[in-house]
View 1: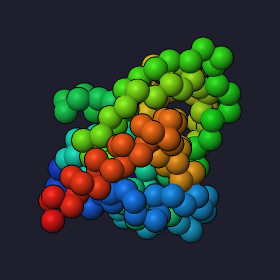
View 2: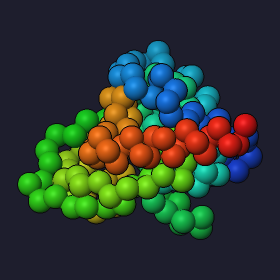
View 3: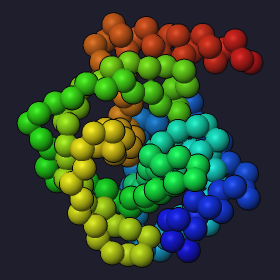
Length: 182
């Protein structure tokens, strides 16, 4: 199956549970994907897309569903116009000098948002499901989303780009909201 087929299959499977900070795996560096990992990755992709769409979100990294491997999903498309990307072992090759602020949120920090400044454009390289290497120049929301997901693979959350004061406020608010849900 390809990315589009896994995305479509997400409507027929249960979503994987998304881990909420401060789960330890969210702070660990994910291990590079090896060829022998691909069968288990393919087995869970539809459920991972299902989790991302149900949240709803535009990106989801493997550590967010408890998998310590370097891969992530991104889809900026709407229901009828899905544009799924599966990035295996993604890496940023170059970043623009121009920076852009954008409000970010995270499925592992539900209902928490803050403005994060990141490079406006990046060149990213990753392996596709087909096994081919892809290099792309991306900008705007897609660049922000890809940088955010690659951060997850390095154990970094979007709040780590904020001042200690803002980060602590968000993490305390998250903990309070999660406690109230129990």
